[in-house]
Image 1: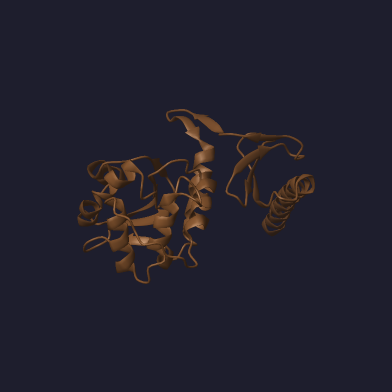
Image 2: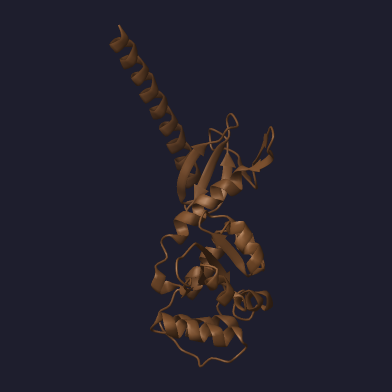
Length: 243
């Protein structure tokens, strides 16, 4: 009898999972049929009955009904006893950021490694001409001494034709990590860099940053995907990272 009950429960669970998959596929197909440019990465039921989370390949998070007829763009909060407003959209975006940044290899970053044991890492979307980026950079050596690795990603705020984009192209075109660090130091000190052209990830990283919610620099992203917009002093970062 127990074996029969267990088998029936497994069947019910399997049918429920299949029904959920069918509903998710239906929503994805509906969105795709309306606009072929919208590539759906995932569809997931939210804690709110009848509301589904849709993550696009661009990194954008949307919400829709079970039929995919209506779409909401914005943040979804959950009122939790004892915790107050919990931003479910930001929780999802943290995972999106982690997954996206994990695909960027070390050779496409400008890495300032920790001194001794690495205790933490921050990934920073930066613009070499940004005042607060330069202020943060002035504390990179201190952060490294604390055991914090600083990985720079390119975010020229003015876009492809900006002066910052040209300088950052020169940095990312350098052949070694040491050369990239030296050029980054010089650019952040306000020095002009000799123009260089090569295949580089500067604009790809700029567009990725936009997809991940970066709208200004510096934008610091922790290894859990949490984003800290703007300049954060070294001592405050140490507290946030709990090291």
